[in-house]
Image 1: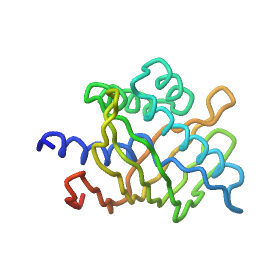
Image 2: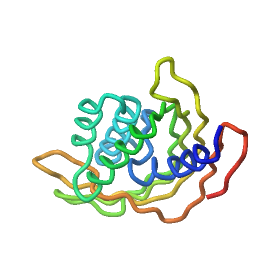
Image 3: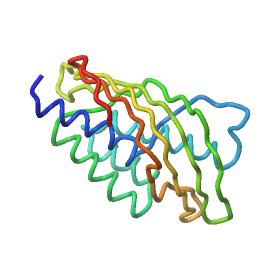
Length: 174
């Protein structure tokens, strides 16, 4: 694998969580209200990354999940994935903690710590596995209610503690 592709995959891993969050599907006792809504939105964004080669379908999902300013970042991220012919297949997200920092009728702020695993593939047919994703992150998410529906408005990293593995087996500390 070329050096440029390894660099791209490393940057892509960081952007996955920073722009689109960490998707997850496991429901626990704490998954009530705004936490459950966040996890559902979060999981949907991995659908968009898996369908990235279908521009209309992936962008439709992204528009259902995000509002500005995060919406433009998410759309740009999908465009970059299409340009590089890369998609992400999400395996699992382990939420270590989700803390509700504030919540009212129009917005909520959550602090999230999660570990996301998956793999990058080409969008070509037949697809080729490019490398794994193993990313731990801690960030805050601002959700806003738009036309009666919750959407992700902003994702801000608190600290970087990510571990990204490339298909060459190298570990890169970010």
